[in-house]
Length: 356
Image (spheres, rainbow, N blue to C red):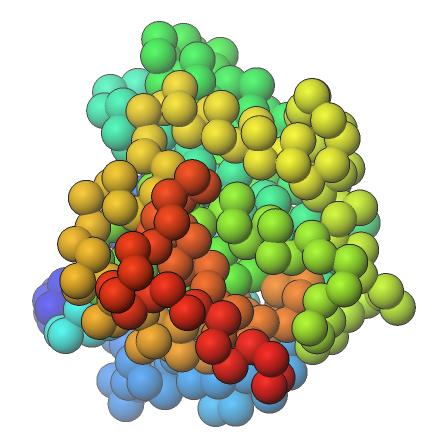
């Protein structure tokens, strides 16, 4: 919020009628909220991040924008966030808590997507931003709010991303960089209209508490979220399901087929995710990423509860209970082959599940 306040002060002094947001996701997100607070000084972060009554109906009205800054132009210099075309912004308060804010009034008026602006990106940014885009597209594709149009954008994005992300990371050819840049924006268009799911809900909370890069956080969580969502017998289906039976397994299988996975099922998709993560030199668990175990345990219940209340949770295809979110976090901490040590407070992660 310190950056936001400085931006608003600058706007009050200069009185612009056009704003250009140049940079990665954080600068673009900041620009969106600076515009909102400049035009509406009474707006607070808590009000802007208020809950939704329905998928597109807020509990508190979000004000109209454009009275002072008539056009907001977003120019991404990373390939992943999709913020240049999205109605979302994530703002961190003075205590380090992340607030996801959603309103179509925040959507930039113009997006200029030029992959040559990414020519000098360091490898870690290419990897983290690229995996973030993959997560956007996958969550958009299985969302309860998906449509034929969002599915089309998501699948095209995934094909480009899986085809070119490793090449962009390793050699950075112009073609691969352009494919990733276009794929990221296509994924942004997809999730702007179908929204996301619990991978992002959990990532927002883990990132805020453990200060992990957003893309890496998604990469570690995503395989566990896919397995959770792909159940044919979920505890509960999504809140607003556009189907009469669980279909996540079918949708993950469609993705697996489109990207050329060895098996056309959720496990084939997870295999591809692990493979690309290894080639991008990304750790496969929070423990391997160096997150302090004691701190993670202490914040586990808080992160699960806050993720349940995150704005992205409503469109997840399987409705999660808080103990289930907690269990996903535990699995993501220890990874595929590690078991929680007895006595560390995590051994009985399923406590409470039998009662839901």
